[in-house]
Structure formats: C-alpha cells, structure tokens
Length: 396
Picture 1 (tube, rainbow, N blue to C red):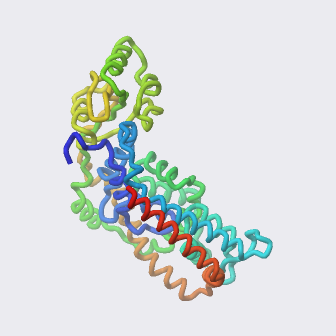
Picture 2: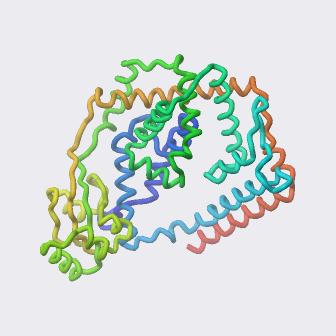
Picture 3: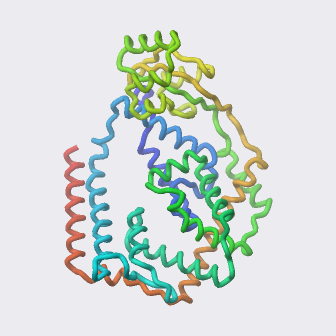
C-alpha cells in the first residue's frame, strides 16, 4: 500500500487484533478474552499500544471522509439476523412463564434453581440462549463447590481479579473502552469476578509458577515487551490551506489549541477531545503527518501539514522514549498471566468433574426446540437477513 493511500487507522485491523484471543480464563475472562493474546504479554505492551493507536487514529480516517459503509454494507444483514435471533430467544424465555413474566425456572443444579430472569439478564448483556444457560450452570457448580470446601471470597479478592483483567488489557483506559464496547459496567462483572476468584482458590494448591517458568516466558516474549518511541499529539484538520493559515495565525496570537480544535476541526472523532489522538508510534500515521509530529518537541505546534485528508495543524503534547522492560519489571505481570492460563487449563477438568457428579436440569433446550413454528420462523428470518446481506454485498 502506498504511503499516500495509507490510512490513519484501519478499523478492520483493530477488529482482527481483537479477535486474536485466548479462550479465556473463565467467567470474567469471557469479557477480557477478546482483548488478550494467548502466547505473549502483547496486551501489556506493543500489541495493546498498537490497538490503542489504531483506535484513536480512527477519528482521522472518519474526518477525512473515508466512509467504511460501502465496504461493510454486507454486514448489515448478518447483524439484523443476530439481533432477530436474540429477540426470538428472549421471547422463548418468556414463554416458560404462564403469566408472561420471568419468575419460572430454566434449569437447576443439584436442586438449586436457575431463574428465567437470570438467563434473560445474560441474554440482554449479549449472551446467546443455550450457551448463556450453560454459563449459569457452570457458575452455580463452582459456587456450590466453593461453599462445600468452605471457600469465601472477599472484596480484596474481587479487586485482585479486576486488576488482573485490567493488566491483561494494557491500561485502565483500554479496560474502560472494552466496558463501553460491550455496554457493561464493573458491577456487571461481579458474578464473573466471583467465579474467577473461587476457581483461583479451588485450584491454588495445584498451581506453582516457578522462577524458571517466568524466566522462560520472558525470554520467549522478550521482543514483544519492548516499546518503540511514541508521541502524543493533537491536531486540527481543515479542508484548505487558507483555513489552516488562519488557524496558525490565531494560535500564534495566543488562542487555545483545544478550543480551536473543538470549533474548527473536521475530525469528528477527536475534536471533542481537543484534537487529542493519544500516543502513537512510527508507522501508524501517513508519512506527512508522522514526519511532522516526530520532528516536534513537546509543546511545539507545526505549520500547516498537507496530506490526502486535508491540512493539519499538529501539536505534540507528550513523548515516550523507546524502552525494554527488565525481567524484574515484568515478573508480576508474567506470573499473573501464567497463573491465569493454568487456572483456565485446570478449571476445564474441574468443571467436567463437577458436571459428572451433579444433577443438572436444563429446560431451555427442550422448551425452545418444541415449537416447530418458532424454529421455522427463526430459520426463515435468518435466511431473509442473509439474503439481504448477499444483496447488499452484490450491489456494492
């Protein structure tokens, strides 16, 4: 791809990176796993930095009018299909109750009921039918085993699990962005954090991360721990040289950069933040923008810089020098990562054992499979959505 056609951000790359995930720890990691890499601590360093850079720089692509709708038109039918199927599942859940409410049971574990309302809440948060119920069954199995072994979980334990997730995602900001993406709050993670803390305590006697384990992991992933030089910059994007010259003149006369960005910038993604694009490394921006930004000292403002997107006035607000963290600096993070991976491996066996010994009732599959008309309607709706997807793709 030529430099002049290089975008400030390729959103598809962000989505691809986010899909490069481990299968999680369990519970709360269902939330974090879409932002974590199985074989390295990239989420602690370059990979997360790159994702953050791309996400922030998406605003420049948007401002430049690089509309992604034609490229993504085919996704509309798939999304419509998914939404419709979730809606049908919710209707199916309500069908359990004779009064149309959510007071009935969709299953039980050793006689402990799983309510329709619990399943409904899970679906609303983005779960899907049978797998959502399966997750609730697993949660109840783990909870019962923890009670059986006298295991309790304190607020400090929950805070630790939350910290593990935040570290795995690279920063508090990345964590908050993920919450926003999934329309969740920290409170929504409580049950998952509880399950994860219980699993950690149930399996702790089987986990022993040695110094040699940490050293080996560090050696194998040392290159990924290093970070390149980065700058943090804000910009004001306008269409013409005359507009850029006028803004440059105002800035020299003492005008506030952030205020002008909010008022004048065409970059709708960054203007509300005063033009802030956060930190980025070389290779993230088009050449003209990048060369200007990296040539500035902190606090300096560029002359108008022309790119395919228009004219930019750039202000560098911070810098990070290239760094290579030591083993000691990464030891705690590596230990947490290896521990979480081990918990995931061992929890699979534990949960299988608990399932084999438990009396589990799952009413959801039977109840939703029974009405043939509903199944037919869902299939028809899915086919129709898929057809519109294909039509949209063909038309584009």
